Structures are given as C-alpha cells and as structure tokens.
Figure 1 (cartoon, helix red, strand yellow):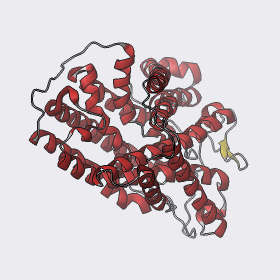
Figure 2 (cartoon, helix red, strand yellow; figure 1 turned 180 degrees about the vertical axis):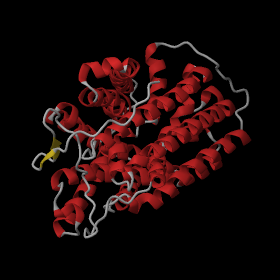
Figure 3 (cartoon, helix red, strand yellow; figure 1 turned 90 degrees about the horizontal axis):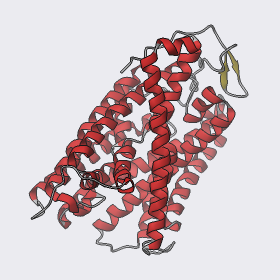
Length: 455
C-alpha cells in the first residue's frame, strides 16, 4: 500500500466569508481557516478533545448495534470467507480513514462531508453530501432507537407498547444530544464504549455456557449473489462511521493526532468484530439470529441487552448531535452564535436537535419498512463516506498539490489504489441498494410488513 504523506502548504490564501470557503488562486480551496477559531474570550470552546477522547467516541459510535448482525453473516457465506471479509474491511477502513484525515489536515476549514464536497466538486456536491450526512445521521439515530426499543421490550417481557418505548428512547437520546460541544459527551463515550464491549463479552460467555445442541457449522458456502451480498452488507456497514470523522477532528486540540484515534478504532473494531462473530457462531451455529442476542437463553438475552442499552441510547444522541451540528454550523458559521451563549443560538440548536430526533422517532414508528430503509441509506451514503469518497479526496489533493497529472503518474500505486477505492464504493452503493430494495419487495410479498402506529 502506498504511503500518503502530508502535502506542502501553498501560498497564503484569501477567504471568501460568504461561502465560508477558503480560496487560493489556481486552487479552489487550500483550506487554511479552521471552522472553529481559537480565542480565549469565546464562551464556548470547541477545540478541546484529546485523541483518546475521540477514539472512545469513535468506538462508541461504530461498535454499536452493527456488531449484533455479524454472526449471521458467517451462517450464510461460511466462517472462513466471512472472517476474512471482516478483517479485510477493517484494514480497508483504516486506509480510508488515513485518506480522510490527510484531507482534513490539508483543508482545516472542512467541517463536514458537505464542505469536502465543495472542495472537490463545487456547490452541488456540497449540498448532496451535506444532505446525505444529515439523512444518514438521522437514520442511524433511528436505527439505534429501534435497538433501544428491542432492548426495552426484551427487559419488560413485551409488557409495554413498542411505540411508547420508541418515544421514551427518543426522549433520552434528545437529552444526550443537547450539549453544544463534543467534549461534554466524551465521558459518556467512555461509558458507552465500555458498555458495548462488556455486552459483547457477556454475550460470548452466555453462548459458550449454553451451546446449541446438534448445531451445524459451515466453513465455506456457495450462494447466489443476493444472499451473498446481503451477508456482506452486515460487516460493510458495521464499519460505517467515517461520515462523522470530519466533525470529530474539527473539535480536537491537536488534529494531527487524529490518526492515533483511527488506529485505536479500527484495531479494536476489527479484532472485536472477528472474535465476537466467531465465538457466537461456533456456539450457536447456523441458527444464529440477527441480532445475535436473540439466540441466547432468555436470562442471558435480558442481561446482555441491559448492558448494551446505554450504548444504543448514547449513539442515538451522538448521531442526533452530528445532524444538528452540521446544520447549525452551516447557518451560523463564523458568527457569534457559534461561540457564545446567545438566545438565538441556543434556541436554534435545541430546535435542530429536537427536529432530528423527532424525525428519527416518527420514521421508526410510522414507517413499517424503516429497518429496510436504513439499509438503503447505508448503501447510498455510508458506502461513499466510509470507502469511495476517500479515493476522490486523495486524487484531488495529489492533483492540486503535487503537480497535476504528473503527480498522479509519479504515485502510480497510490493512484491505482485510490481509483479502486472509488470503484469499490460505487459497487457497494449499487449492489447494496439493489439488495435492500429486493428485501422490501420480498417483505411485502410475504406479508411481513406491519402497519404504522401500532404496538
């Protein structure tokens, strides 16, 4: 794999305040003005996160409910190909994280994927990627709320209407999302990361203590494209958290340390995903469900859901915070409302958090196929945010900062890998969307789609 060194600094740029984008002659954006300026007189200080805090927030956000679907992938394609895929995607995710971080360091004014889209392709790309980030964050919040509802339903023996449980989970997530800066969430990130890790170990202990008699295991399995890629989507989207990286790095004291956080995230996630998937599958076999916790005995199922619940709620709040912050900074960028405790600033911030969580809750309650729509959103946006766009970012910066076409030719290995990264993102997007749409069609045909606003 070609290395991707930091690029040299270009001549001092000028700043277009209206566009909130830094402009240099001959280069659309060399990115020299940070979105969160540092000044001791500001009432709200954003750049306070250490790389350790960022790594915990990343782990808490990515290693969440996605891990619970991984063992079922082993049952479909076999233990060997599935584990190889999980490890490969973890390494691939580290590579794309490196490209995202390099791009952010080269363009400090980039706060979100929308800003990055403006840098590489102009205002249309900015709007598309900004919308995609908000949409995916809201859908991710809704997914975590549904997982919270499943946990609460299990703990209450289905004793309360699931619709009310969704609303309760949404209210908790809303309260978590309200702090204006991510450092206020960092301590909850530690607790959340510990909760999902402990839940995973507890689930493995429960599976090992109660192995399924006569279980069957598959080393490798042949399958049609639909079933195989359906299994592939589970580990692909289990790593889908890169859409939040720019926002997290923007609040770091030392953005140069972001790669340390990425190493911690991808190293932990890759090892934990592989171990959890293998252990759960070996003791449960091909009957393992998705989420895997439903395959445990009732007492172990309840205990594990109880431990994991804080992580689900925290992730819902963090995703809501992300969606709200993108819009908030877009509205008030470089204004006093970002850095001061103004009435207008807090009113808009609270309304944005409420709107994001309200949309997530309404989707979870009112749209019977919401769980399938999450798959479509992941295919359309996460495939690009986690994989494909990173290749574009590398190609853009090498072209504009390292001598144009000649620079790309001189880095032929890096260029080829970047192009393949773009192609992989496109393939995951198209194939994942196809699989998700087919799943919806089959669910309607089999009468599996329920009605809205019912328990």
